Length: 150
Image (tube, rainbow, N blue to C red):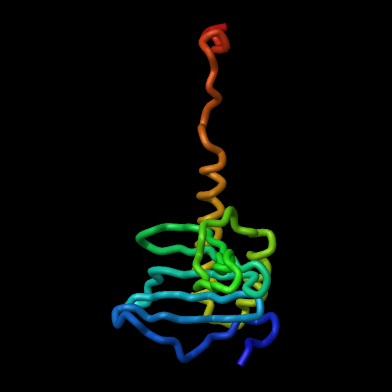
């Protein structure tokens, strides 16, 4: 049964492959959110897939691996030889669309889930911005240096 349009809802029957982790799945017409929590309830990983019906991409975070942003390669490069879709590296998160839409669509899921994901999205954006900023100082040739005491 599809999710109510514009709202994330939890899929209650989810295959659990690792007895030390609880896997959860929330879906809407735009998002699929998968979370993994340890037995104490601590989040150890999440995968936020977005724009799932048009140009699916995913922000993935894990305790061990940090962040990465992926797109989906549907394996359709050779006609007549379909392959299993896989995640591939895919640029930056469309935060201007994803964040407000996630806030709106996640209104009815448990707050600890939505708050955690939003906090991690913010962290990802800060990390990405910091990396993009690069060096802290402008490199100057010797002749370009300001003389102290002038």
